[in-house]
Length: 167
Image (cartoon, rainbow, N blue to C red):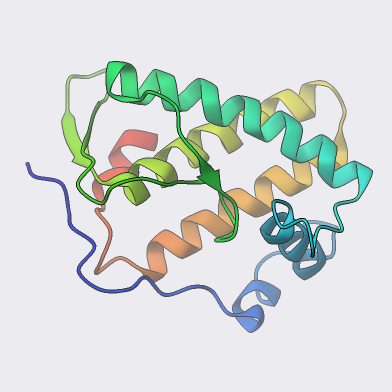
């Protein structure tokens, strides 16, 4: 199977769509804005709680990028402005990702980024719950749902094989 090329622009979730998501016992738009602006020195208003979340989340991103990308993944710059970590690089990059059952898929940077984020957030949820870090757990669930809604909204542009990889 060939990597899906992003032929048209992806569509982002609106504030109204974010507000319609679950409660998560937090101010979703506030934390989403904080996350998106985290790398922007002029707009960074990251709270200590959000910094704690991002710090743990980022560690899982790097771990699962290496785990899923293997030798193909050699590090890189991950932007946060889409509401999830998005690996930057050539649109020609192709990541061959396989499941434990031997299914193999080819993803472009954005598809690979989404799969990595969903793995990272899932594991972060379990870690936070085990450590009784309720806010981090709620944020991880929210950002996981946000990323899945982004994937669903862009189903005509992005590979549905991401669902198989994260299952």
